[in-house]
Image 1 (cartoon, one colour):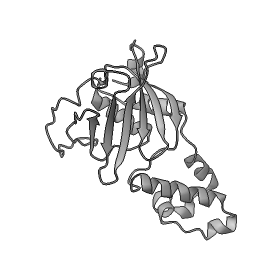
Image 2 (cartoon, rainbow, N blue to C red):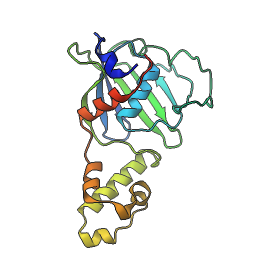
Image 3 (cartoon, rainbow, N blue to C red):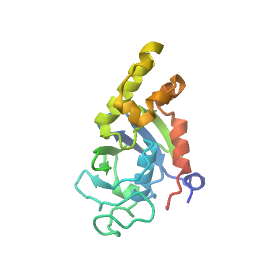
Image 4 (cartoon, rainbow, N blue to C red):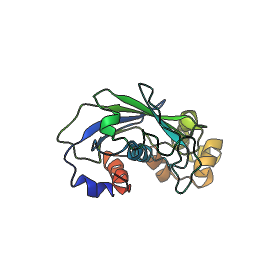
Length: 211
């Protein structure tokens, strides 16, 4: 079901803070408590602009852990039982009270962690919307939070450099991520601009969630 369509009929919401560990990036979203943990995974990846092509698992603070599963279509290459109890659980049951926490591990080689915290409920919040967006997006396959910091640091240095300095600028991270030779000031400024709440809401609305 398309998230926008579901929003029209949902009457309850809960508020979740999604924080990308070891960065300053956070998204606060309003979601119906009835959606599944599997749907939460798709939302959590999309709000940080991950493509979802790597393995993931989620672990609640009390230790309840899902199986590891892929986020790419049509693959059965994962560890554990496809029908484990975590993924089909509603997020209202998985995070039943204010302050409840879980951690999503994504792309184990790079070590991405998204910390999910249930915040105070807000009856007036519209389901499937972003209430707050802070910090930059992630970049797939950049080497995790450390690699991300290097990419954005080099990008800021390139933007602050003179025209001559830019022509002589060397950065393996920018060559890999953006093709440094074709990088423009307009693109650099756009990459260093945190996505708005409206943009995050649009991403969530574009997901086709099985609810």
